[in-house]
Length: 88
Image 1 (cartoon, one colour):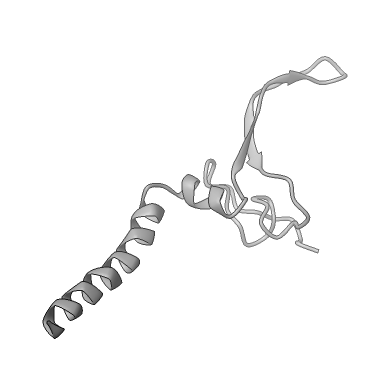
Image 2: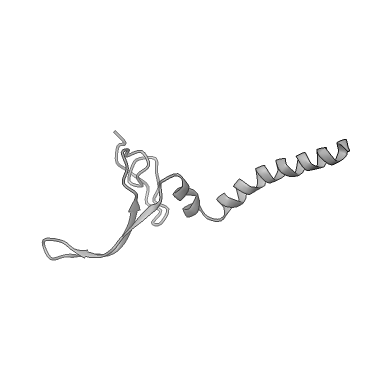
């Protein structure tokens, strides 16, 4: 009987360790979405001076500059460009 409880505990522990890893492995986009940092797709538009702006992807707006791709220490995952702006 004790062996059955140990096996059951081991299975539960293994599942608790494996399931979050699988969720993260499904893609960074899903992982970031759970933390509110999902990318925002901006459609093309025409500026007031008549120039056409192509569609692009940016970080979701929030109250901090620390997680923006253009901030120093961060890298844009789509272009590979390293951030250069000061965070404060």
